[in-house]
Each structure stands twice: as C-alpha cells, then as structure tokens.
Length: 329
Image (tube, rainbow, N blue to C red):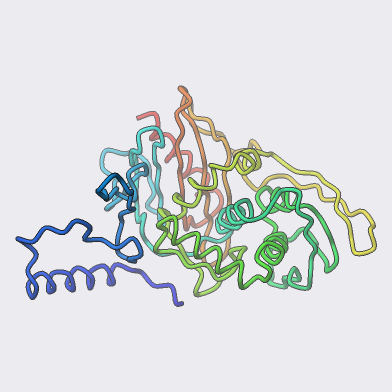
C-alpha cells in the first residue's frame, strides 16, 4: 500500500454519494440501520437492545477534528507539518493544524508496537532475538541486541519506549506476532479497529518506508488507547532505564540509557501551570522531529499534544512549549 493524502479520496467519495442520491433518491424511505458495522465508511458502532438497534457515533467519547483550529491562539506552528492539542477532560480541540495530513511518524510508531504487545503478549513473556534484530540503517538507535539474546517483554517495552531502540521493536514484533510480517498486520488491524483510517504501518519501529504513514489525529487515537494500559502510562514517565538481560550463552549484558524525551531530562521546561507527564519522541530525515505528549494542568486535567515534522530538535521543543501554553489561555 502506497501512502497517499486522502483529501482527494474524500472528495471522490462525496461525489459518489451525491450521484447515488440523485439516481436512487435519498428521501422518503426510512431505514432502521442504514450503516453496516463492517463498512469502511461507516463511523457507527451498533448496540443491540430490546427489539431495536441504536447507532452510536464511533467518536462519541473522543476529540473530533474536521479542520484547522488555529484562530485565537498564540502558538506559532508555522514551521511544523502538523500539530494538535486536545483536552481529554471535555474532548475539546484547543489547537489543530493539518491533523489529518498523511505524514511519516518516525518512532512515534512504537506507541502502536507497545499497544499490540500489551494487548496480545504478557509482561513476563520471554523474548528471544533472531537475526531480525540486525538493523544496519545508518543512524538507527539500537540497544545492541544479537541473535540468541533473551529478555522479558517488560524489559523490551521499557527499552522500546524509554530509549526508542529499533532492534527492541523487532524483538517484540517477532515474538508476539510469530513473524515481523504478521505483527505488522496486527498493527494495521488495530489501527483500523481504533478508526485510524489514514494510517498504514510497514514496520514496527518507524524507520523510513514509503508505505509507512499516519496522521497527527490517528496518533492521538493510538496514544489514547495505549494509555489505558497502566504499564504504558508508567513507562512513558521514566527518565531512564537500567537492566540486565542475557546472551545466547547465558552471559549478562547490561543496558543503561536515559530517556529520549528532553522534557523528562530537564533540558526543556513546560509552561507555568502545566506538567509534562510523559510521551514518545521520533526523528528521521523523512519525518523530521516529532513528539507526542501527555500533560496535565494545575487542576490535574489531562491533555494530549502532537507535533510532526519540526525542522530541528530545538524548534520541536520550543514549539511544544508554545503549544502547551495554550492550556493556560
């Protein structure tokens, strides 16, 4: 699947539906259930009731974005390819720029990798590395896994999310999915289930692939689901991680790394009255600099923010400070 911007597809769908109304008539006849639960274009789930069925909006408990929301804000996101800030307490869209623009996600991909692992694996599951962990792409972040190395799922998830190790993503994928290819299919199925319809995953780590893409809004849907797992919420707050795992001969190997999140490392500070809880970073040449965060205000109300495609790390973090400051407005 080639990742494309779906604006043209939406336009074509509208024309198709309009023509269908003209040819068949859209008034006069009342349909009990005009939407199929298996339809790709249906945004309704079905609840069975006594002698009746009721259509409930898919996004009834989610933030919904239909276009840019930038008026009456001071945040300067002109250099960012996409940016969103949502209030989770009241499902309010505070800021949105290109929320549905199809873009490269870099290592923000690993939130879905963790979600699928937590859903279908177990924290005490023993994972064994194969040659799939041998990633040779220049600049790829690695923890140094070799074929035959073993660790628990819990260890792998912490290395994945704290340090963003790409070989840890491959380790998880092969052990949970049975193969990397099957795990990728599981990721895409989960994205579809969550309504992340502008997303297609081609790998479990986020290194650049023409067929690997998502949107800021879809990332919010995925992050929102991952936060339902206590372990995920705990890991994304960690400032570093140290552990011991084993090679094929049973010898100890030590891992000790700080988080990639510069807010948690104290290199950048959130605005007054805003606390950064945690999140996920991502950077590739194709994606630019990306960051997804969970934050809270002075009253403890939760927020999600995403920036994709910042031109540099400094602009990313300063831009995120500007975006989070909208919580105070």
